[in-house]
Image (cartoon, rainbow, N blue to C red; front, side, top):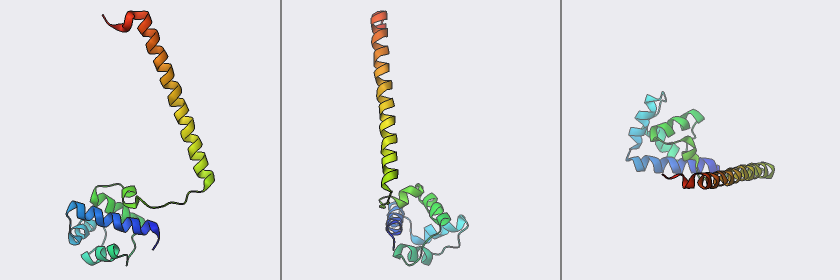
Length: 121
């Protein structure tokens, strides 16, 4: 079983238990989403004996009131170094813009403070 499948399975079990739902209750809710699920379907999924389609995963997240990403969370994802570098550069550029905007805002506040005696009256 791939790491993403293990993470999904564990997070789905955790979400179901935190909500206090039985496997039968979840299966009924999945039926309302148009899936022919039974208690045994969810049991097999939780045991890792059955996979889920992307649509099923999205609907299961909806049943639990979470995002699909929450069910996949804590899954190691192999991101190529070039993509990591590009993301890091993007974050740095964004941080620089925020820093410059904050500096500009501080300068404007100081100028207003000096011009208007602090802006209090």
